[in-house]
Amino acid sequence: MTHRYEALKKRESNARTYAATFESVFEYGNGARIWDSNGREIIDCLACAGALPLGHNHPEVRDAVISFLQSGHMLQALDLTTPAKSDFVDQLFALLPAEFAANAKIQFCSPSGSDAVEAAMKLTRIATGRHPIIAFHGAYHGMTSGALAAMGNLGPKTGLLSAASGIHFAPYPYSFRCPFGSDGSQTEELSINYLENLLNDPESGIPTPAAVIVEVVQGEGGCIPVSDAWLRALRWVTRDRNIPLIIDEVQSGFGRTGSMFAFERAGITPDVLVLSKALGGGFPLAVVVYNKQLDAWTRGMHAGTFRGNQIAMLSGRKTMEIITRDNLSQHAAQMGDVLMDGLREIANRFPVLGDLRGRGLMIGVEVIRPSDEVYPGPQDGDMARRIKMEAFANGLLLETGGRHGAVLRFLPPLIVTAADVGAILDRFEAAVAAAVH
Ligand code: PMP
Image 1 (cartoon, rainbow, N blue to C red):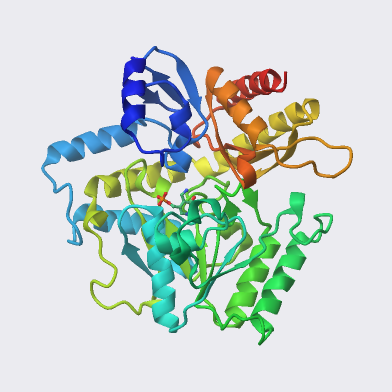
Image 2: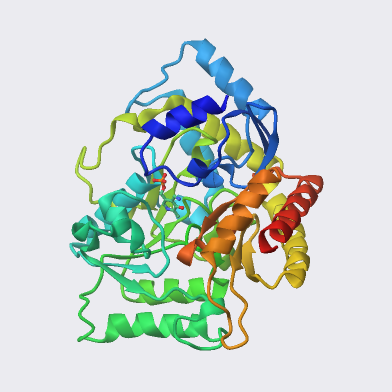
């Protein structure tokens, strides 16, 4: 079977990500597990970067999709009104905080988080008549040119000079490596002060921005969460100046962080909310939900052919129903605690595991080179990759992220059980032990 792996490797672009290093052909998936063509079982601790909140092949979603396919309904409908679309919107709006939903409009996008981010940025620019957008260090908002511009990581932008236009960056609070050089306890306060100064100083070089865009938990940036207090302060700073706040919950939405949306816990609402990944329950779907006062679009101004995918709407609605019915946000919070406690114990035994952080089932472990001279020791991307490959050999699929690729990211499906978490921890510990020897 590995001939398939070799044959594809020759033909597939270098743009392929983590999977390029896994020399297996994957065939089946069930819940939190996948199987390769040799029958080897692997725990999927990535869940398609959070796009599979119910894991692989959830029976209720699968049955709903099969009966929809057999029903004769349209499968693609572009922007036509259909029962699947109307039911989907009702279900999504029922999950949003009531005061946000009451004044919100929804826009379907080409089915990727990147396109929805593009739409959000374009919308705020059109609505405010302003151009600059403030994003944060370490941010990941997508790979299309506009969304890429807002990415904190220079790597993917190299050679794309146009991708730098109109975006200004502010430091994101990161207590383990405070961007202001403090011991970490002041990182949040300093980051808000910095932002206020940027906005107040007439010589900061930044005219009033069209928007501030933020992830409540940076995902690709290394699973770095902000506190509720920081998010409230950001909301206050932006609202006070009439600057729309775009919250990108493409990765953190739909229960993953222990609440339906990560912003909710802070008791604030965004002006624009970007959703994708889990939104389609495993099928491609992306939307922007925004305050209707911002609705400055003219007809067809942000179009896209595949935004009317009816199967994705059906599976997304079904998935939202199950997340709510089975209280999976709360379950994610509980399983996240169990996973975090277990990781902490392992980290006590292995000094290369330098920092553990996250929220719910969105957890990052920063791998470092322990040092007597500096604290914390530098990020160790090579060791993180070694641990990732040892984990894969032990039947655990993890992905790296963050600066220098030094953060091992744990994003299992929300349906993991305590026994699954135990197996994840066992396989991870064995992987770390093998990698450090
Ligand atoms: N925003 C965030 C927070 C993301 O994590 C991602 C994808 N990792 C995107 C946007 C882009 O989504 P997509 O890959 O579907 O374009």
